[in-house]
Each structure stands twice: as C-alpha cells, then as structure tokens.
Image 1 (cartoon, rainbow, N blue to C red):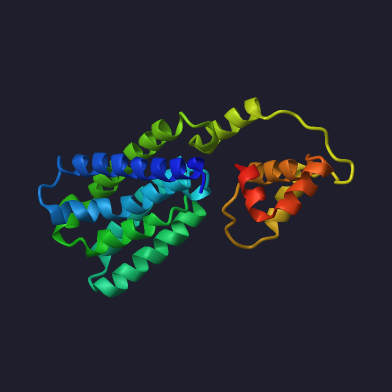
Image 2 (image 1 turned 30 degrees about the horizontal axis):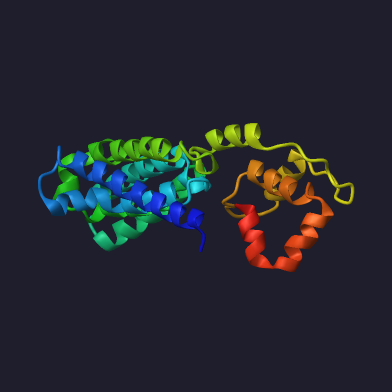
Length: 239
C-alpha cells in the first residue's frame, strides 16, 4: 500500500478524533454525567465517519449533516411525547425520520440514531424537550461540519463541501481532446437517466459527468497500458 493511501486513512482518523473531542467537550456545558453525554455524542460518531472518510458523498454534505440531525431530533422528541410505548415510539421515530429526510433532501444515516436516542434517552432528553434538536444536536452538527471544512480544505482532492472540491478541480484539471470514438454526453442526458432510477443514488450529476469525461478523454495508448497492467494500475492512476 502506498504512502498516499496511509495518509488518507490517518487524516480521516485524526479528523474523527478532533471533531468528536470538540463535540464531547461542548456537551459538558449542558450535561455533567458520562451517560447523558453519550446519548448526544453517539450518533455524531457515525457522522464523523462520513465527514472524514467519505467527504464527497451526498450523505456527508452540510445540509445533510445539519438538516438530517435536526429534523430527526425534532421527530424523535415529538414521537416520544406522543407515544408512551418505547418499542412503537422508537420504530416510528426512525421510520418517520427516514421519510422526512428523504422529502427534505437531507438524508443522513446517523439521523436515524439521533431520532431513536430522542426516544430512549429517557429523563435526559425529557429535560431538554425540543431544545434537544438545537443544543446539543444542532450545535454539534454545525461544529462537526465546520471542523470538516477546515480539516479537509488543505487537501484539494478531498475538499469539503462538494462545491469547494468542484471549484478547485476545475482550476487544476487540464483540458484533453475528446476521443471521437466516444459520443458526447450532456448534463440533461444524465438528469434523464437518473430520473429513471427510483431510489436514492449517492453520487452527484457533476461527479457522473466528471467520471465520464475522465474515462472518455483518455488517449487509446493510455487505456491499453492500463488494461495490461491490471486493476491495481487503474486504481493508482485514478488517485
């Protein structure tokens, strides 16, 4: 494994360490017991994986992180107040949170845990009420997003959020002549194709266009060399 791959893994881990430490410290301003703080920090651990190990995916974008957590927390608290049975309330809170995130384009997997913790948090969450969605959940999500922007920014290949990455990649990528053997594809073509897939696709239209361009703008000799070298060569060239 090359040094770049190790660097990527270590950066992701360090980002997770720093972000969770900050969020954990913030929760001490509101709760003093370890058990109480654990309810608020647990789902943020999953968020850290997305922000620092996969900052390019749609699930990790700022609106998904902040909106997903806050919306799920609001739903969780509401369900907890209305339904006394924890099994029914927990299941309903997670299900409603998924649908709500879907409808608001804020799908964020850790949001399901945030909704569930609002139900099983007991007196800890009861003491906060709807404030639970703002502090510490909303505040924690905002802080983690800001930390992800700062940690990922020095590295052009993993800049976050997606808009910063595309801005830097457009400046750095050189223009290569299209191979006439491949037909052009437009943004509208990809939008039409994506519309025919009746499920969530975790890749942006811009990324699809970029992948297509990188694949079709190569000269045939380069493609031939990569084919003879095998999958590892293709993977290393992709970096």
